[in-house]
Length: 273
Image 1 (cartoon, one colour):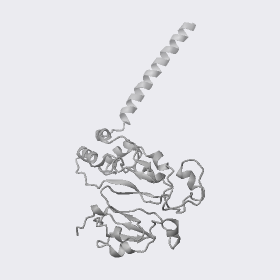
Image 2 (image 1 turned 90 degrees about the horizontal axis):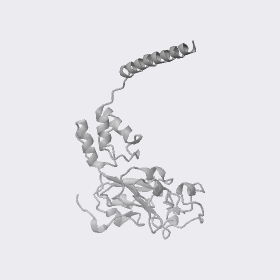
Image 3 (image 1 turned 135 degrees about the vertical axis):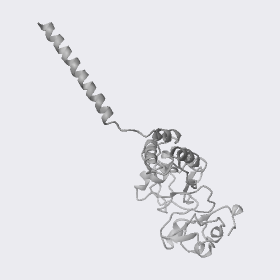
Image 4 (image 1 turned 180 degrees about the horizontal axis):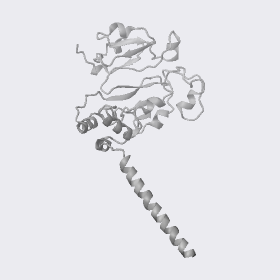
């Protein structure tokens, strides 16, 4: 009797398993979400850095967005023009030309140019130092050189130089934006790779205190703006800003800046109209 019950139970479980299997198989076909094969093709050609610089959660998110028509085919800054061309070919489109950009630290306030308000003894972290009254530097907008940007760069493209400031290696930089997101001073920005004229100041204060805090700070005098023949530089929020779409690297602003807040190698200057 007990053996019959065991057999009956086993048969019942087998039948139920078969029924559920059939139901699941039917459901998987009925409600299956078709995946566009181009998603996998795009995913294969992107670098796989998963840095998020494209604005999507990793390379999978970017690949899906491209196929859906949400993201541009040249939306991967790490891959650059080469990857954009491959993605465009997969999508049957033409990749728009894009200017390569790299990160640049807008500060030359090393120890000789900018003093400290106090001696910082904490951990080597800009984020930690910034919580102590904005950090030790006299200029509250300058690079503190404690390496928070270095720690987050996935491409080993930024380091603290011998002057104690963060410095980007343009050959390694992929414009992923990790350092920009991390910097508590917003002292890092993206500039065109071939840009020769750079404003190396981030101080937005006004008045004589600016020059007291840093010898090479922009004092918003407007000399650069008045002398630029291409209308490519203007003082905005007490700080000179270059319009890279207009700048031809004539470097007249470099010559005219009284504090040296605008830098460029004059031997490389271009004088085209």
